[in-house]
Image (cartoon, rainbow, N blue to C red; front, side, top):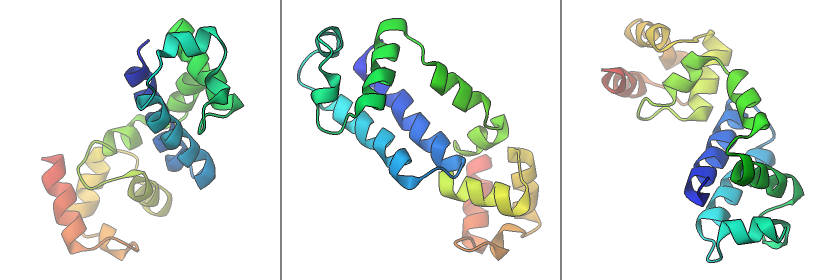
Length: 147
């Protein structure tokens, strides 16, 4: 697996952890790890083979293990389990422009909305405007994004 593909998975893990309400430092560690990986000048395969990933600033022991697993097997059990633990509808909502993990989490935890269809209906019924950080404009943007 290429370093860009691995970086994308690390970013996704960060987003999933944010959706689950995990510690912000943990979510940021995955985002930073992805950026570090993307900026590597040395071949990833060489770093993995020589077990030097952990020596790179921004990549701790746990992250080095996950990157190594991805690089050598093309899979990561942690990622698969994490993705499976999140409702598919919440992941689908992340594809709507203007809806990031924080807003998706708010919509789900405060209003119990689990699908794009339910989100669309909630916007049409002006239910999102009551949430902090949401308003009529946000509802309109979400409806545009869904269409």
